Length: 117
Image (cartoon, rainbow, N blue to C red; front, side, top):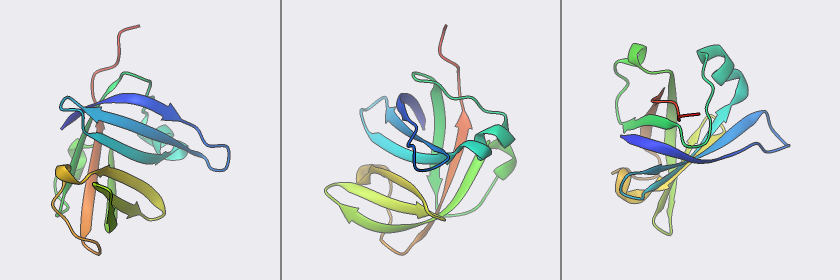
């Protein structure tokens, strides 16, 4: 699904950025991404950029994605599904995924169209 980068946070306590994404239907997704991983993938993400993100139960077609996380859903709370990807956190509107706590999911991320400068 195509999302737009609504906000980017850079916490002082970790070498990550927190992407706050929104779909065209207004659903929200929060994704922690290590700075080192962005550097290795050659990606620079800015506010209003488009990001393609898919959440699947199986590991497939990794070559066509910039980043692939292997994760476990661990909690549903207040209409949000919380997912851990080796310590990195992802949260999203529960309507975007049909999973239960303890189930493995794969999150696929690819940089889309850059915002116009």
